[in-house]
Length: 152
Image 1 (cartoon, one colour):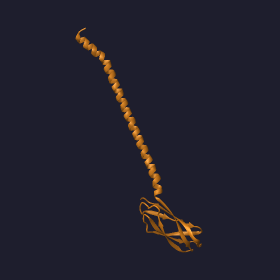
Image 2: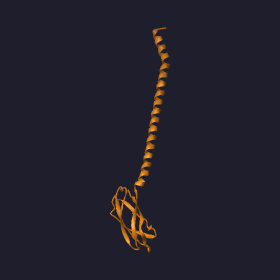
Image 3: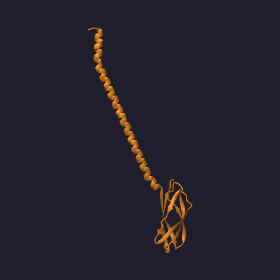
Image 4: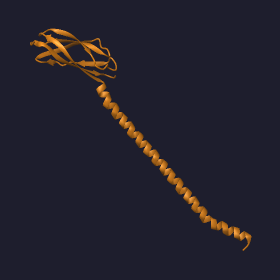
């Protein structure tokens, strides 16, 4: 066998090994790509879950943060008589853009909300009038005032 034939035979013998190396490299590269895609997919899924969890938390905390409730003791109101009540929220409102809704019935008296003035983040002034024919008697009564913040 000539030297040229020997080199050719060695080269032909190395071709399957080279093909196997190339195949292994391709398989490894494909596996790495799949792993990277899996990592990217997993990261995207985790980001999506985090975003949804944050949105749920914001909703859960946003609703209560928009509502204020205050229990106040008021003096007796005779039929047809009104009174002014200062309301101070335990937690300030985010802005002064809110609606106040006290109850219409307190005991046997029917109350009318005459006005809400002096809206601040920390409170407001509520003017009520007993519009029923019944006196609100007994010295004092508890009034529940509810305010809902309007974010718009």
